[in-house]
Image 1 (tube, rainbow, N blue to C red):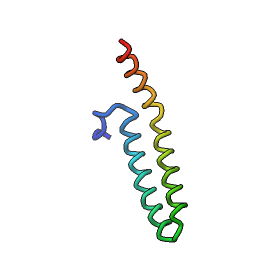
Image 2 (cartoon, rainbow, N blue to C red):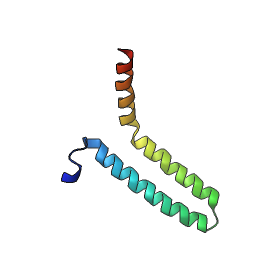
Image 3 (cartoon, rainbow, N blue to C red):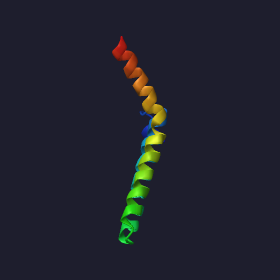
Length: 73
């Protein structure tokens, strides 16, 4: 994967994985809505968004710690 060598290690995988999860969630949500289950579609899409946020939690925590040390100096 020479295409993503410029990106730091976890970010390329997280970006691609997040985009794929979101896209698949959109497709499934539209099918569920078409079947007449709009509230279930909204809940399932919300669950996928929470999953994506959970995947990024470690990197977000590290970024907040770095910003916190820069601000406190």
